[in-house]
Length: 481
Image 1 (cartoon, one colour):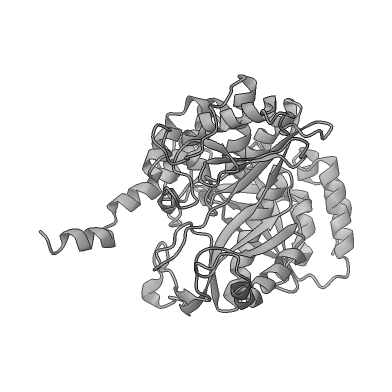
Image 2: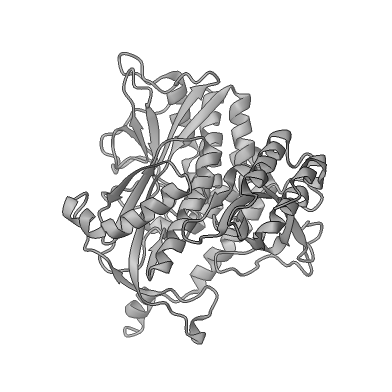
């Protein structure tokens, strides 16, 4: 592998798209890869839906990616979850930088390079997406999160977040690869359970799922993710993986890699992994992402430990108040799919109201705090496992900071999180879109360009859903009328 001597003289370095630290890391990486068995590199970026997209290059081309970047079609940012382009790129786009389906530029992040255990000789590297000119693409997920983290830094704060992610793994009976299944979106596979459900954390059920769990554990640890535990969840074929805390950008990248890795490793074994919140399967359970978060000052002093009498710290109180204040309008970022709202059910260990409580798993915010406990933190139980982690983390940072900045105080904690009187979370993606679109807070925090972009992308998804005739409608009306 050659060409690393020219990285500092390349376009990315000369225009500041790769800073001095990134240039040094890229040069060290290329030096380490000299004489290795690396054959291909998948140069990827996280899209607006939290899906990795990109191109596969031969290993010898990696140096050029660090000098000049790599181009991909801008229409990848204009697609809904069916992969349809929902913006008029050929006409009517006005001054949009996406006019004409031109390219955007991918700028590699050398810290994200990973050798792939499921594909010997291949590796991943994640990128930031920018305009061809080098200007920021304001709605690119890593850009949105980076700006939120900068606001946190400007306030003299640091944040640690935890990943606690539920998902399902099923056996594939029929992969749905007939020509007639090649639709947009493609037909889902036909599956069956690997194990029965409703045996939460039982040892014998874990033993039954251990071959799959261990296969995934090895793969996850092989790419350096800080895995902590592998657990049997409540539903059939449902697992939960938890991770040690990290900063928001690191864990956003980690969640992207986790979801992609799990799906790729499973499909090689005739299995289907899904992070969909509530699959349409008999007797299944919904999956969620429990987003742990804690604050520290710039010197690393924890700021969410309660007072000796148990009273909330000033930072914990402001952060909780901010998350509550903006919870409903944040749902487009934490629960971005039609399906995710079908998880918000009372008495199902998922929130349905905007409330907080002390160690209460029915509340939207679960305060896990004790005097003297440096790990004191808040667990937000709203996000779905399929959420775009960059947008989800940004929503928490911006909301929490707003609560701190304005000195807000939360209402008293609840004991009955499903009781009457509390504000309800949005009941549908449509309601979440409306709330986000009319949010003065997010228009100020993210900019109207970002808000309008996400609203347009997600409204296309919602309108396709409304136009679809469901099984419920067929059963309810076809015979009656």
